[in-house]
Amino acid sequence: MRQLSARALAEWLADGERSKPLLLDVREAHEWNIGHLAGAQHMPMHSVPGRMGELARDADIVCICHHGGRSAQVAMFLKQQGYSKIYNLAGGVDAWACEIDPAMPRY
Image 1 (cartoon, helix red, strand yellow):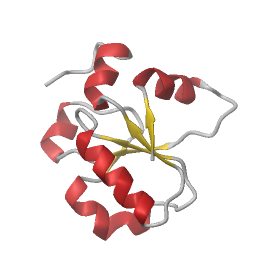
Image 2 (cartoon, one colour):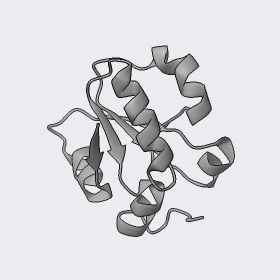
Image 3 (cartoon, helix red, strand yellow):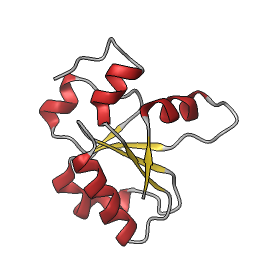
Image 4 (cartoon, one colour):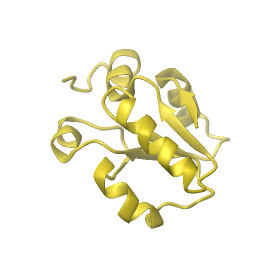
């Protein structure tokens, strides 16, 4: 699992020559409803073991949570399950809101 800064993710998403990663938001529904990255897939942390079959094993997957702790755990779990291109958004949506999208609500 690799750590990815908010700025590095923003550059990746803006790069028209590079395929876009799957943004996997593992926060709870009430957190998701406050705000999330455009195009993200919502899969709360507790549901990942039962739903990981929905994730392509060869896809670039960026795991996202509030500050990066839960998403790091999910990223490590997916790596152990054989997913090879796993990233963790360091600082989570809070870092994204602070560094990239100040219009995103913070909590």
